[in-house]
Length: 169
Image (cartoon, rainbow, N blue to C red; front, top):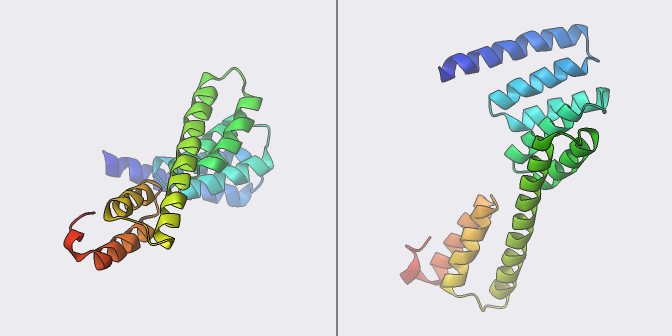
């Protein structure tokens, strides 16, 4: 069933892109392409298509909302918050916009708190006052923020400094 849906979405994108070549200023076509990319979990491509739709029709609250959802799925919460705010302005009676705004606001607040914690741990590391437990905490926070490359580097550094604790991740 999943492959059939993927194939259908892919085929729909091809057909919509062909229509777009004939009607490049049709916001609805960009919106439909974005929805197909969303179905395929290609959130960055969905965002790009929604942004094209918004340039052509900036009064479409559903485009603002759906772009915010794609940005949220891509982990771009601050940008999602801006788009969602506009969706709420354009569709004040749509409860899903208010719910989405609350969800995104919570994620932005959580991310800011994690960034603050990571900054504190980084200061401890720079001062040479970072214990293995703190290093592990830092790694966990970096992973939570999606900064896996930095987290892996921190793990290697911690293990090199404290070989007896190399199994801690």
